[in-house]
Amino acid sequence: MVSAGLDTVPGNLIMGIAYLSSKHGREIQQRTYDAIMEAYPNGDAWEKCLVEEKVPYVTALVKEILRFWTVIPICLPRVSVKDIQWEGATIPAGTTFYMVRPDP
Image 1 (tube, helix red, strand yellow):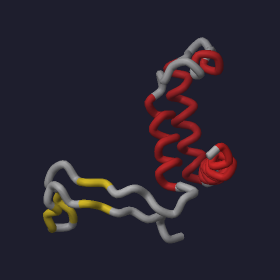
Image 2 (tube, one colour):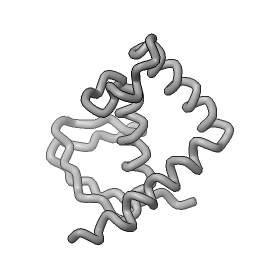
Image 3 (tube, helix red, strand yellow):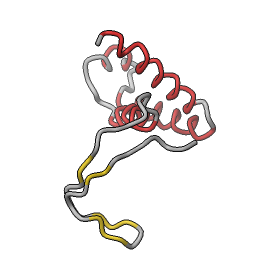
């Protein structure tokens, strides 16, 4: 169990950094920086970010990186809690969704 994080954490970090180095990723970097500076205008983000989550954009960015570039090629199933309209069809509440990684 201890060795599980030896692959997943570095893998997610590498893919997140790789994405942030793309053209769109640089835009995300700027938005992230702006959100951090808005929340911590005195430049004390480095100390305070370890004890509080004050920048929702950063939290969302990390969660999106973990969702999109998961090291393990499967995700746990999800169940819809309400009807969903998608491309002219109705997906009823209670439908189980299985997700896979995107095809590059």
